[in-house]
Length: 465
Length: 100
Image 1 (spheres, rainbow over the protein chains, first blue to last red):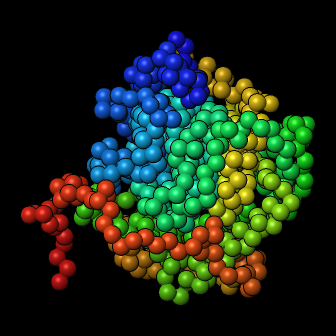
Image 2 (cartoon, rainbow over the protein chains, first blue to last red):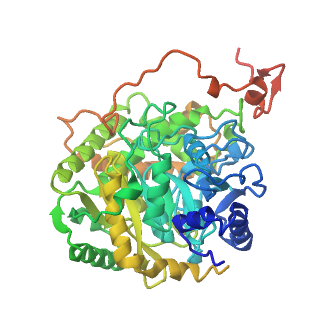
Image 3 (cartoon, rainbow over the protein chains, first blue to last red):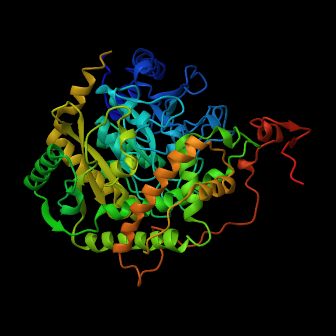
């Protein structure tokens, strides 16, 4: 049976109708990983012996393999966050996201590469080597959820879990050509996720299509008593919500097109025209320039990092602090400074106020429009090593993603074809707090209309069975 | 925001000690350049008038969360599990560096 590129929903049908066995499906992905991942390096650990997992095909995931970013704790399976500090850490418990996937008979196939501690936008800071872009091995997959994005793009897993602090799902999804959803802050529990910027961190989903994202979101979203910042807001049936075509008002903000590559701007304009043709209203909105979100994010995230990474002392688990890599050390140092006596007001407090401004700015905009649409990143995937040339690299790559994270609103990357260099281009749609169902609805409509410019077949022809 | 001072090597050594990190001279040199460029970038926040704005501490409108003060047995770990990841341990204690 030809399985290449099949959606989670299609695979689920095959499993439920007994045309395909859970073990067969698992082996299919294991074989593909053996064949291709030596080069791509999307996985840090692969669970080769799945016998304790692959037993049942009940529940909403029916035995579907899921790849998990390596900063989510998995009971009995090494969780390193791609840092040698945690190179031998075996968590004694599952993160809530993983527990919920297992409860619905999802099978964890492996742990995916990331920038160390999820600090970065290219997966180059991983202590276990860079993840290569499946479209071009001389380029990065983006980050920090680069392993998750690359594994989905090359069909080494049908769906993956990633996490975002500001851009870490959307950037690699954009650069690898897959769908990547960062939900509202608090929509998905952070329990058992290795903390980076606690007021920003947000688990999310990477997949080849929108309906699969809706299916998995349904399973992992919702209040968790173990994460006090997870919210009570009811989880709707995201899958059902896709079936009714809704008409929306879409906002376009010029500020999100500054310093963006011309070819990308052209493609995004083309997408806006497609949305207009499908009956949505397009309206100009004015938003705070994303360059300010870069400062807000950098100050607050570094501060939270210096606090969160304070716990790594090598006593209860992991290695001592001498094992931290360059990026983590730099971030801890800056965060220690921005929180220190005498500079707290100038940096931390000022950034918190500016964050509130950004939040208010979106709130006003969402009174007039349902979504804001623009590019995900200012350019397509960079060459490996190229980031060294940009001192402020990650933050500038994440610039267009950071305002949504600052405001805690949901946003999605949709693949919109390839550029002249055959590299994926990403379209970003942002929505108001807890409007995931509408975000998925318009994304689904757009997918049906465009088939994402045929990107899936262009990618998968490079990865035959 | 008023122009902030640049970090010097001695500032960085102080921060390094506060954060319990070890950096050699060449690492400090790289970090000095990088952090000062970053601090320069932060100056742009001075463009934003935040005088009438309160600080954002939370992005969604959640309130305090309470729970009963009771033990959740499903989350209890036995001692062997708790010590499993520790490199230095003795008689069910973690061994730490001498403090006093």
